[in-house]
Length: 339
Image (cartoon, rainbow, N blue to C red):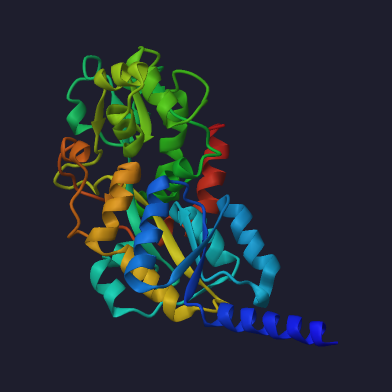
């Protein structure tokens, strides 16, 4: 009896200790070593422990739904506005109330109802063979559907969320009919069937399999700063173009990685503090160094390799539209024969 009582007391003390521990529970679809360093620095500065569970975006969203009101998760971090929209549609997020986040993050990179905020920016631009494309600095997304690029375009599958979000952004800015016409022209210009990832498109341009390709900027930046000799050689043969930079053009398409506070968050105040920390200039450097992304806080410095890419004008459309228009974008791509 005494031994049982002693065990009960010990378990109670452990429970109290755990319940008193300041913590924030993060479900993250980002998988970068620098993110781990970032979380450790947050704990060092605030005393709030970060408990991390990693997985795919859809997997984590479904996990939160399955856990329901008993979910321990405070924050969902994922990449691409389309996936943030999936979390929104799953009704697992709650509005974030923070004047600090509103001041630091431009409105086009925050959900209109505060359901999530962006943490970093990703440009989906055009990689070119500068010796094969005249006036490549003036390229637009629309140009890729022009007959002059017949048999010269490489791109990955329409199943890729980055491509879906690009099409969704065009639906928002030029309308569904014009976007479908563009998608049909783009498919007619494919140099090969869509295959591989963005780095494969860059390599294809480098070896002459195509003259232009659609890619996120950081894939080229990673190839340029890595130690793989083949990738370094490939990167040296191409240029990254920010499309639609003319005076009356809308600017380059921007996607994001972002985060939201979950509806049943048990540590909401800590979750807000965590997001506020992630948007400080000192924290933003981890997103920059980890994957060569652009900071969402304009006060943070960009990576040296990105400084070499030059300044650019970005599309001002609120990135929440990328998710809202995702179903229509997929239908357009399917009808156009983009597989």
